[in-house]
Length: 447
Image (cartoon, rainbow, N blue to C red; front, side):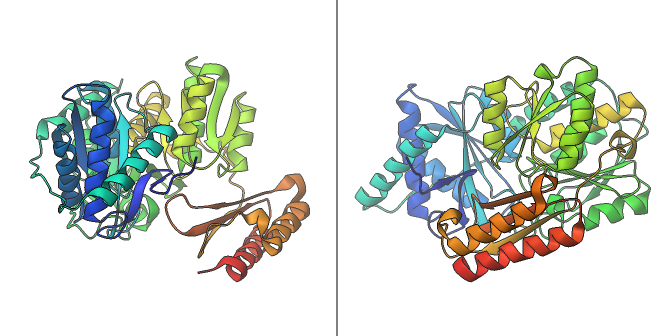
C-alpha cells in the first residue's frame, strides 16, 4: 500500500507548489477533519508552526479545511514539533498538526500530524487521509478558504512548564551557548535554560521568515563552536528548525552528535537500573564506534531503517526506553512520544551535572570510525538492486571491506536524493568507496 503525499516525516515540498499548494493543503484539512470526526463528535485539533514565512499561511488554510469539516482549532503559534506532540497527547486534542520542514531551507515547508496518543499517524491512517485528499481536490470547484489564527501563548507556556518539571537538578554556574537556528525554539530554549539557572549565550534567535537553518543550527555547527570557544562555555547545543533534534559542542570544541548522546544516556540509564532490557535502538547510520562502546557497557544496539518513526516503532515493539539517530533525534520514552531537542539537552546537562563532569569526559572512550555521507540528486527513485552498474559497485565495496566496514545506500524520504554512507577504519578507503558508489548512481540515475 504505497503513499504519494506522506513521506517518512509527513507531507513536504516547496511552499506554494504541489503538494503544498492551497488546494491540496485545504483538502488535507478537510480529510483530517473527516478522519477525526469519524471517532469523536465536535473534535478539537491543535496547530503549531515554525518561523518560515509560509508557515502561518499554510496553518490558516489547513484551519480553513478543518473548520469546513466542523472541527475546532486552537493555534499555538510558533512552537516546536515535540511541543505539539506533547500538547496533543496531554490536552483535549484529537490530533495535532505541525507546519514545518524541519532542517530544510525556508522555501520548503511541510505538514506533520500527530494523533491524540502523541505519536505520528500509522501508515494505514495516512494512506486513508491521502486518498480523501485526492477526492476532495478532484471534486471541489470552490476556491479554498482560510481561517485567521491568533496564537494562544498559554500553550507554549504549558510545554515549557513540563520541560522544567522533568529536571532533577539546577544548572546554576553553567555557561551554555544555544544556537536556535532562527527556528521554532528561538524563544523557548533560552528561557528554559535560564529558568534552570544557566548563563545562556543566545545565538541565531532572530527569525525573519527566511533565515531558518541558514548557516546555523544543528546542520551548521561552525557558529555554535565559535560561540562556545569564544565565551568559554561549558556546553553548546544547536537545534534544527522545528527543534526535534539537538547536536552538542563540548567545552573543547568537540562536536557530539546523536551517537554520543545515546552512549552517555544509555550508560547513565543502565547505572540507574532504568534501561529496559539493556537495549538501545538506533539506525543503520549509527557509527560502529557507538555499537562497540555500548557492547563494552553490556548494552545491545538494535538498528532500524533511517527515520525516527522507525526507531520509535521498534522501541515500542521491544519495550525500549531509549533510541535515536546520529542526526540528533533522540527519544526518551519515559518523557516523550517523539524526538525532542530541548528535552535531549536537558537530559545531557542533567547527566553531566550528576557526574560532575563535561561532555568530553562522558564520551572520552567513544571511537568514531571514519564515515562519509554523499548525497546524489536523482531523477527517479528506482530500486538500486535493479540497476546493474550500481548494484555491482555496492557489492564490490562490501566485499572489499568485509566485516571491517559498512555500506548503506538509500533514498531520502523527503528529497529527490540518494544517500551513500560508507564507514570503515581507513579514511582514504572510505572516501574512495563512497565516491565510486556515488559516481555510479550519478551516471545511471542522476538528475
